[in-house]
Length: 332
Image (cartoon, rainbow, N blue to C red):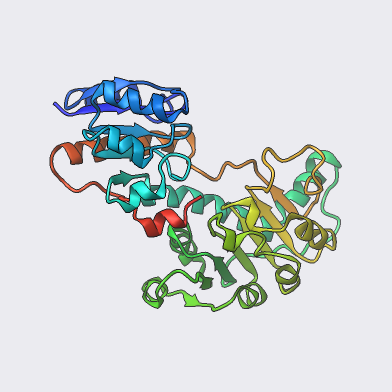
């Protein structure tokens, strides 16, 4: 029977219910070692002792290295429950052809849903009205410049899985969509009916809404700076559900203080967002606290997908969502 070591950093219950684990135990010899020390030797020894052919990992799991693989020739597959992998497996391991999977495209719809919420909150100015109704005890004294999403031009900064899921959500609104992503072929944009834009300034200057879906890599750090923000038309909105470092926070604060544009932010350069952050209290800035990812009701769905992938491997089928070096290089 195939031996599986479950080695998640923290509590596993949010991903894998007892029923899922019981189900897996019917087809594999399952061992659980959560909260393992992040030490290469300890990790290697644990895998060797368990004689694990498959290791299931997640947030907080130790780092899998080439040295560990050499010490553990029985290990053939790492099934990662979550998305980002840089803290859990080295590029050399991926490059060697070792099988690593993650949650793949499954996270896209829920993050896209949060991006859609941010877009609507900006256009409808919900933060301003929330302040007015809850804090200030006021009421609408005059017509505010709220807008509908229907027929608006929407730009996508990055055109990966989440952005493509957002395209599907935006279709009923009849939005004209364009995107900037230097890492993709033209055919990807064409398949989704999205116009390709060759530079960021053009993307931000021509759209009423820009939703950011760029990875945290050196090339994207502060790519949305004062110059890019200044290029946005009056009344435009920027939405960020990807990584806080993509936006230069100080430049965004200064632009928001003018009242010329609005923003919806779920991620920040410093998290948790400091209590004295200049972003707090701005009526044209909708804030959430890194909640765009999988909601609790969807995390179990992701766990089941991981269990299904392990079963596919055991049954000799190709595992879904295999991570390539190209994908790894664009991950956080």
